[in-house]
Amino acid sequence: MLKVDLKREDFLEYFGSKEEVQTQMNRCKHCDSKLLLTHLPDYGKLSIQETMRCIDCGQLHKKRLHVLN
Ligand SMILES: [Zn+2]
Image (cartoon, rainbow, N blue to C red):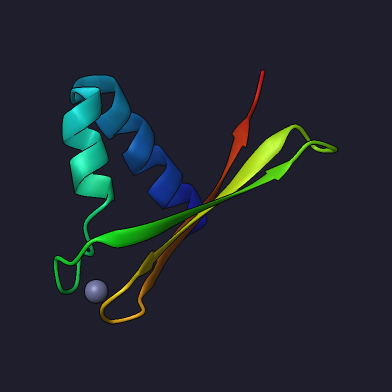
């Protein structure tokens, strides 16, 4: 399930403008409220854990790992 989300994001980042994708990603899919973005850098693994939580309904959207280099 997580792999499907990652592929969809890659698709959007490639074909959409950065701002468009950013707007879509920062909106709750359930109630359209703004999402709270949290980044937890993990320098040991050279990655960032990204979590988006809806401030209205509390829906936790996704966690991603980005390789920093
Ligand atoms: Zn929501």
